Structure formats: C-alpha cells, structure tokens
Amino acid sequence: MNQHASNQSASNQPASNHSSDIRDEVRAGFAALYGYQPTSTWSGPGRVNLIGEHTDYNEGFVLPFAINRRTVLAIGLRDDRMARVSSSFADGIVEIDLDDLAPENVHDWSAYPLGVAWALGQYGADLSTVTGFDIYLDSDVPVGAGLSSSAAIESAVALALDNVWDLGLDRRTLAKVGQLAENKAVGAPTGIMDQSASLLGQKDSAVFLDCRNLDSEIIELGLEAAGLVIAVIDTGVSHAHATGGYAERRASCELGASLLGVNSLREVSVGDLPRARELLDDVTFRRVRHVITENQRVLDTVRTLRESGPTAIGDLLDASHRSMRDDFEISIAELDLAVETALENGAIGARMTGGGFGGAAIALIPAESLSRLQVAIDGAFAEHGYGAPSTFVVNAAPGASREP
Ligand code: ADP
Ligand code: MG
Image 1 (cartoon, rainbow, N blue to C red):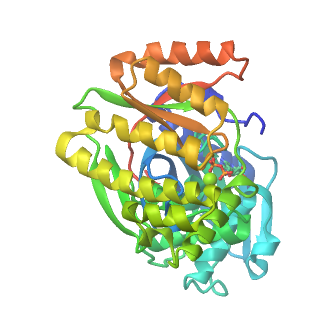
Image 2 (tube, rainbow, N blue to C red):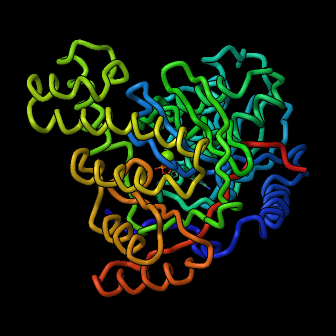
C-alpha cells in the first residue's frame, strides 16, 4: 500500500467554493489542448457510503450519498470517428478509433472514459454510426481514497455521451454502463453502488439502493437540522480494487452462498446464522456474518433516520465498523485509529467507508466538534508515525449533471 496522489490542495475547503473554478479551468484546458471551444460541460460526483459495505455484489442493501466533490469534463464533437480523452491528472491525449473500441484496447486511466464509450455500445448505442469526440477532465475527488473518483468519471462521461449521442438511456442504465466499463475495461470486479450514488444522488439525501433490482429511494439525512456534519478522514493509504483482498472477499461470499444453497447472500438473514455456523468454515462464516448483519444495519439505519433522525444512527455506524474490522477483515490500522480517535473526540458514530484496505473513514459529528476532531486525528496519526491524514466535511450533493 502506498500514499495516493490525492488532490490535496482542495482537501480542507468545501468543494462548492471552487467548483465553478474547476468548470472554467476545464473549459480553458479543453480549448488549449484541442484548439477549439467545447460544446458542453458535465460533472459527476464522488460518493461516500454511509452504511452497507460489500453488500452490493451480494444483491443486498446500500445507503451511499453523492458528495460535493466532482469530476468535471468538457466535451466537443468531432466530424471523424476518433475518440480522444485527456485529464489534468495525466500527460498527453489518449486516442482511439471508435471502430477499435474494445476492453482489451483501452488502458490505464483512459479505460474509465473509453470503457464507458464501449459499454454504451453494449447497452444499445450503435457505435458504428456515432461521431467521435474530444473530452478533457479535471476533478477534486481524491483518487484511491474510497470516495469513488472512478464512478465520478464514469457517471460524468456516461451522461455526457448519452446526451451528445442522443441515446436517451435512463440513469439506472447509465449506472450499469459505468459498472460494465469498470468490470470489463478496467478489470475491477466492483458492484453497482458507486455508479448508482453518483447518478441518483440528491442534495442533503442518501440513496437507499436495493442492489437486487436497483430499486432506489431517496432518504433525507437531516444533518443540518440536527447540527451534525459528516467528516471524511482520508488516511492517505491507497487501496487497489483490481487486485487482492476485494476479489478474495467476493469469492468468499460466493462460496458461502453456494454452501448455503442460495444464489446470493441476500437470500439469507440473521435467523440463518446458526445454520451458517454449522455449515461453513470459520473464515467463510465470518465473511457471511458481516454481509448478513450489514444488510440488516442498512435497513435499521433507514428506519432510524426516518423515525428519529441522524443523531440516532451512531451505534449502527460503530457496529458496521466492528463487523468490517473483525469479521470481514478489510480494515487497516490507520482506519481503526481514525475511527477510535473520532469516537473519543465527539463523534456520535464512525466507520471505515468504501471497499477497505485503505481509503477513508467517516465520522458523524456535531459541527462544533469538527476542529477538535481534526487536531486529534492529526496528532494521533503523527504519534503513530503514519502519513498525514486529511480530514474534511462532505455534503450530500446532487448526482451527475450538465453544468451551465
Ligand atoms: P477510487 O474510485 O476509490 O478513487 P479506484 O481505484 O476505483 O479508486 O479509481 C481510481 C482510478 O481512477 C485512478 O487510478 C485513475 O486511473 C482513475 N481516475 C480517477 N480520477 C481521475 C482523473 N481525474 N483523471 C484521470 N484518471 C482518474
Ligand atoms: Mg473506485
């Protein structure tokens, strides 16, 4: 695991202050690179998962929200069949003839945007007739921090191409397009949560998503009325989805489901745990127990938010973290320290968020306790000799959109 290259300059300020700067920079960057003005500008947000981790690919429940950190892109149409993409994060322009678009022909970061173009073809776009395009993008979503900079790109590109190619696909389908791009073109076996949050999110609300049928409901968070904020504590330790632990955990869940005689762990619930204990080896049992209890915690969180508001969900967040640390074993020392330190410094609940093995934790905390939390986290990380973390507030923001 290594320190990731996040866009640190933006870390401690609300993104809303500079999203218009990003739009201007993106349009200027586009013109400088391609030599003409773009026709439209689009954005896709990163996301924070409030609760429901590693449940999406088990056809379970998740409760993410889109955040006020976004990937912004400018797009122009060409009169030939070239697709060209560039990013402030990488040198040069990557280009490919639309006739050559295939998962095996797209590489590195460009596999995200070009993979989306390919995946649109898999969802009904006739790629043999569409025109080529130029895209330039920039982002203030930290990369590899578990805030889904990947879905931010995918949703912005999917929405932009759906529009300029006049495809008329709905947002649920665009989420599947993003997932297909990530699974096949990038080669990361991720679920549907990130793209759904990035496309379906709404201001001050979370997206309660049933990953079995993609039914979704918007759940008001009510943070401001309760005087609460959600702080992200980015450990600076990068995860790597495409390899290792993530795929292993998926395999354990599949094994658990097949030994229990079900198609997915969605079909079992807390009442099935004693039987699972009998049938499964200890490791598989604990993986299964995490998924089963996490699904229940998502349902409990939705009910609690509705009945009692956000001040009452702290214990559920804490229990989720313990389950990921002890049963699913996807936390790391930095994330555990972030969670413990947050709970000792005013947080009413805290948990690691995202796929694990690095990335960020979230803390639900009274707004007035934020600076105390920041100081305590910095101090604790320094004391342990860990790299400097970055702690910042995220707001629940609207999903991918066209920018004025
Ligand atoms: P996460 O989604 O948690 O941030 P991922 O590993 O899923 O982490 O996706 C990160 C990858 O997405 C980066 O390694 C890079 O390839 C690509 N990426 C994200 N944001 C950008 C960007 N602004 N420009 C270019 N590539 C990006
Ligand atoms: Mg990702």
